[in-house]
Amino acid sequence: MAASFNLMMNKLNSSYEELPGVYEELTATESELREQYVALSQNQKTLEQSEEKYRQMASYDPLTKLYNTTMFLEKLNEEIRINRVKRNFEKCRYGNL
Image (cartoon, rainbow, N blue to C red; front, side, top):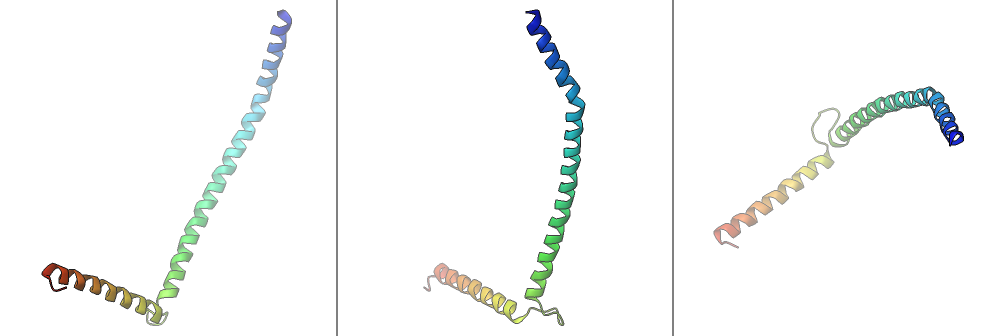
């Protein structure tokens, strides 16, 4: 019984001696993760800004800042579709269908 107690105490002491090294490793890993999180957040902001810039470039004329032809036609078609739905609704509502 004494031998198994000594063995257990030796393992416990060995584990206790390893503890500072493990703590340093975990602390280093935590700081690396924090740095990676900050870098990821910055990349996310940059990506969002780039997407907005490209959206603007794809939709607006750089000189006049008005819708370009493609965006103008998209908006026009959307308004036509909305007006058709409204007209059909009005016809149904007043029984003129």
